[in-house]
Length: 170
Image (cartoon, helix red, strand yellow):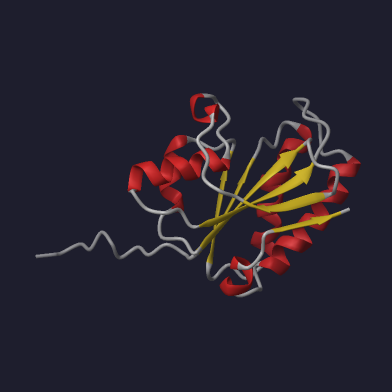
């Protein structure tokens, strides 16, 4: 008789979740940063997750994590990138096609009854989202800086990460 332990597939303690569309110009920064990390970072404790957008079912991907970094393009920042600590928040995005990380954290709380892991958003300044376009030069430079920041971040201890609030780079 074979006994299967469904709890034997332990999750890695860190989740880096990049989202965006590779076919929409600067919207590709999330997946492109993940590709960089896959080539240049130690992923022994890091799980990489890529999707077009956040969905309500992604809430369970937060379970059993020490910390999570979401990566996305942003038009509303002035610096090349911004790294911000997030708090769960009920907003209307869970009813739309584009859910926010904060809403995903709120769903996690409601579904599991647990406090979500510490979550951050790495926003990369972007400006062009046209279908079929490639990455703009400005956003490519911003992405390079964000990739360096993210790779460095993954070398830090969890205690160091937990003490962070925000960071930005011009």
